[in-house]
Length: 245
Image 1 (cartoon, one colour):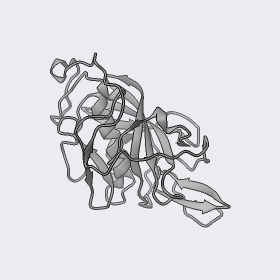
Image 2 (cartoon, rainbow, N blue to C red):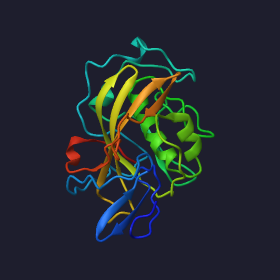
Image 3 (cartoon, one colour):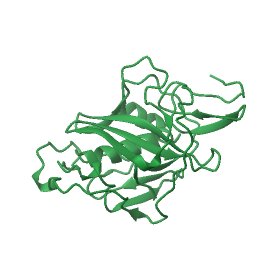
């Protein structure tokens, strides 16, 4: 499919590339059919530093249970499990940000995962925190041409046929946990796109992670909407927990 500016827009996309057409930003997004600019008005979002590990502002959840008291089952890959839901109120502690061979930057945790690095980063803890890391890596890897098809076919369920992404980079900026149960976590993941404007605007998508066959997977909602992941430009970045490299 092509827009009026001649830019090829794949049927599925998430924050991969962007083009300016008639002074309007049109996102190419790899996990939704082509949708409109669900802009809520422009807002700037900043990173919280260049350090390779960080914890973002937010109130910790004092009532969160210890990882040693988990009542949920661990996955098939040995990543463990936890009832701890502190990630709902504050960014994960001791996150290490790593850069892939393709230039994507993703989060790594000794406890939440990914525990497997190759051929794709996978194996995450059965917890709200594990779902956050899994969602981040699924979105990163599904948009990286080097890992897209394998990631999509293995970890995206209820979606249409895979289409090759264009490979434009985006950076994780923050998140909200919309809801969290033992086997289902909905995350609003915010990113910035360096190739759009000055790269400071935040864009978000709603990702439903489900625990299936011992691993976290991204489930595309049952909907006729052209924007099933709710892609939108963020108008108020203060509503997000900042989490970035």
